[in-house]
Amino acid sequence: MQTMPAALPIPLALIGFPVGRGGSVTLISPMVDIHHHLLPGLDDGSPTLETSVAMASMAVEDGITHVVCTPHASSSWTFDPKLVAERLDSLRDALAGENIPLTLGAGCDFHLSYDNIRDATARPAKYTINGHEYLLIELPDHGISPNLGNTLYDLRLAGMVPILTHPERNPTLQRNPAMLEEWLRNGLLVQITTSSILGHMGKKAEEMSRTLLANRWVHFLATDAHNLEKRPPKMAAAREFVAKRYGSGYASLLCEGNPGAVFNGGPLPEQEEPLNLYDDDELVGAPWWKRLLKRK
Image (cartoon, rainbow, N blue to C red; front, side):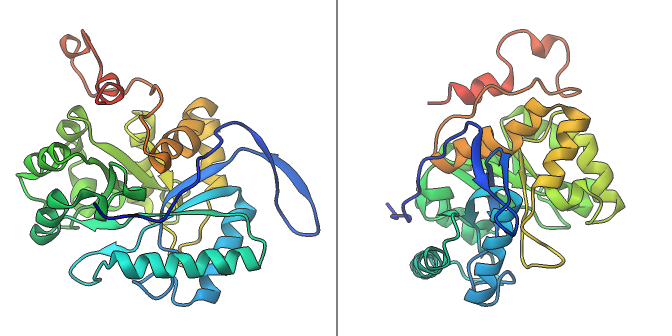
């Protein structure tokens, strides 16, 4: 089994945490970012160690306490766990030298290619978050396979729990969001991008993200940060929006409870009931989230 860099447990209660400049201190809740291209020089994310340190500092100022570093694993970007571990160690050393209190974990942004799927089913911990069971998956923008449900089943059978990244930004799903329904009923988890909620990723992404949130079809907010400007590592504004529009409990699940469980490799906490997903007959008996909680 592939050994992943050590990850520290996450306290999921309110904590006092120093943020801002000039020594100001604000009481905030910890936020866990499970999708972040923070490691330098591995993909189209951070190009240098200096940029990675600056992104980490920005994340901490925004209230993020834990980040999963997720370089692409695709035909364009080779995923090398040994190199990931080396860059992770270097970044941890740099953050310690700058007194930036950010806990780092490792995973990848997994593209559903034939070669990737075959390798992952043979060596799941190579790709999963912190070597546990959760796997970030990214769909192609066009040409989603009609057999995707079978692929998701195969990943589950191999011991992985797929988390679909940013479906609100996928052109195919924007045209046909109903494609998500069967996958969700079969246990797929969903992560949307904080910038989408705030309208920075286009009108269609904004509208779809808010529909998914209203239906409680979202399980994680994450930054998908790539840089300091256009794709920054910020979650607080999106969390605040979700708390005001959809409830503080749901916002806490998306930014703390659920991503904290993923970081630590544990079962998800109890979820809010999804809307517009099941017929009345299907709601008799255990809902989908109870099946997830009992999967162990």
